[in-house]
Image (tube, rainbow, N blue to C red; front, side, top):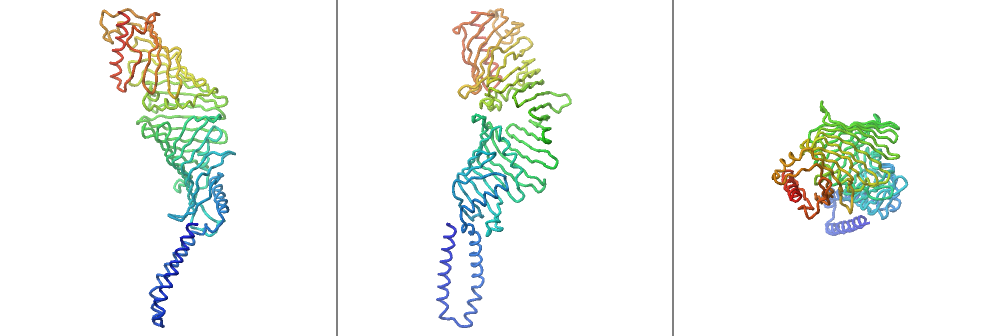
Length: 496
């Protein structure tokens, strides 16, 4: 209605101007003067008339009933996106910088339920057929500050939008969040949307999805298109902070999905081959070198859920679990695996550990049940002389913190080699064959709390060793020196 007031005021001022013009010239009016008056003002009057006509044209939607306008826009959105929009507040029409409608606090229904709440909605309309409400055309829709709620029943919402009609239409989502929830409505993780665009690419002759998002504190971009003729889904994911690119292609029919992902991580190329049929997902993951550095195979059954992953590698990399912004650590903290129905087994063997080459013959055994990660019977050898085995060891989340509570049995094959490495004084070198340590490790704080130490079956009193807390540092050399000093302190107290 503000636009109508503007035009009315403009017309009033323009009429006053014409009246003043006539008053000044009527008393001089004759045939010659009248001709000059018409010639001098014809261009100006034509421009003003066109402006009035154009402003009237742009403001024409305000003449219609707001409910009729809202109803027609909903029909257009349903036709373009196959989504049911609900407007809780009236649509507000604006023609600058280009004609569009805005509204606050709207929502979308999807699969018989509300899937999102939208704080701001903008619907841009074409200048074509603006006078005809029935023929009004939408050319751009923007959602801002929306919260989407997805679960295993409606998880395909964003992918299914690629079936929309984007030939002369764009759809954007800005500054929004996706909450992925369990069926019990618990938030498992949050994906932050910076911007998402759906559009038609005339070169590819396909609908495209391009997005900049952030998940688990990791910014990433993704580009997706679905080739309906060839029945293939193409996607490319880029995580710049990890120097990771994933180029994926999936072929599909009514019941079967078969795909390959080419993964480039810091210039190391690997392949991920997979197949999804009915409720079973199987995969193989390996590098592209002639002499493969690693190979993993696994399967996931979804109903009922169970999984099994086995693999071997030349060097195991634990940074995704232990580094400052470790993605596996962040995933575990979300408690996404805290589900009674999850049954997960992982067995990985490695020749050594990346950045810790003294550790050999590494075997990681883990199983996840009811949100607890059991790593019992995981083993490794240090300098081919000392064997470590994890017993009664669990990784779990408590008060938002990821914790490892573990018992480690240390079998020493040659104690003299250990003393040489630690540079332990000869007068303190007692014969030791087995050490048991019970400790608690806090992943975020990088803090180890030693609860109990026993040597050859004899418990050492806490007053007889010099530390309870070990604070690990980012620098591995500092950690090595630090731990050497601490271990020599224990040996000194035990021997003394």
